[in-house]
Length: 87
Image (cartoon, rainbow, N blue to C red; front, side):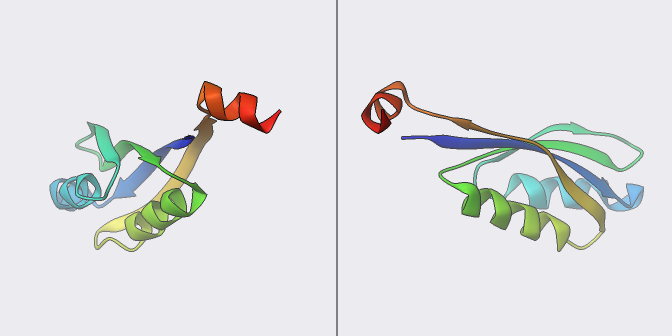
């Protein structure tokens, strides 16, 4: 089974960074790797497909206090057995 892995950069109001961080961390498959005092948050997400990643991004963008949330990287980790099956 393949896994979609992506990173997000989130910019939020500095006073709301903890609430935004906690809301982001509560999303399925999302891990917070940095939460700066300036309101910049770096998150990694893993999902079963591109729809799960897109849903996480939409939820981040609609979180109160978020100014912007953008995908920085997206990759697909393909299971070796699945890759052979597709050949």
